[in-house]
Image (cartoon, rainbow, N blue to C red; front, side, top):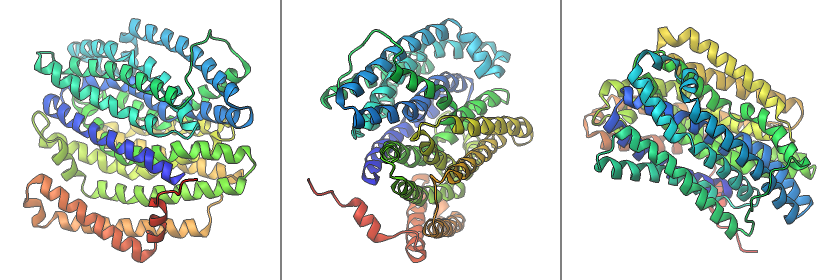
Length: 510
């Protein structure tokens, strides 16, 4: 499981690095002004569907059903289930796409109500959203293809597909901008193109894996009904983080121009460890738990979850501490070029520090939710998810004016901690989660090592390091932070070299 998580994490890391290159280009060309706000709102809706379906609800509903059919009934019934769900989803999503294109102004009245005060920005957001919106039809079908591949133990192609999202946007931006196209429109066309390219890649990967899917006439068979019945609640249960970020966008649109953009850049940096760690481990954990629960191997499932938590927090807690300690150098080095000013970087860094506080909770939600989904329970995460969204909205309304973008980020982090703790308590009550003393000692050691690293980074920020070139200064800070955490982690028992050697050892061929 952990080796597969490394595979997913490595591809996700590649995607995030390209994503930073993409965002550096956007920041330099658009900054944090009205055109940037319009594009990020246009990107939010299809991106919401991508993350809900690709990293959350659809996987939670489909993978346990497909993996169960594959294990108990064989190849043909599992493939038939995938084809039936594909047919239904293709028709439904096409209808949703057409409605979205027709009624996009009304959609944006909900997603960005503050834009109505600026008619030019609102019109640009509508135009860009109509270009990007068809992406959601393709990417949701890609999520189904990825689910089939993941359930069969093929993680590389599904994890590599998001890289093409960034490649297409960067290439389209450079080519069309050089040809005279405006930057916002060039970016939107890149989003649409990336959906086509990812669809082709994953269809080819399915064929190579020996499980090509053919299009059927849509029929609500019992298997398809089971998947769809779980899908609706799962949209909230698995995607509560994304729903909260969408609430953030709605509230940010009511604040001064640029708030949407500075929150976007802060979230992008925060998404690096979240995507590389939380998404990677959660993606691999769900099929593993589904198989173990199906075979009544409850002790093995508990051990899988405990190990996943330990490994995830070993990477997440130091990342969160580092982002909080050196957020300003990070934002300045990455984005403070061209149209993106030092003041914009400072606003983003303040939001990033608060997002980092919630980072461990965001990751834990991605680990605890599969514990419910693997047993076919999507209703419990829905209840905690709805409560978290309500808490986020209430806190946003209370904090948006006194704390501006920091209040929005703080609301999201507090809601994430509520959701993670609620899921953990409910899993423990049903005896599917049994944290032991070894896990508690490990988490305490990781937290202490992370705190020592953060203190060292704060001290180093006040030294001559900060008078070097920004890239050199940040590189030295990162190297020093890694060294301090590694030393403290080994001395405190947070890092176990023997485990790392076992994890990185190539498996012997059967």
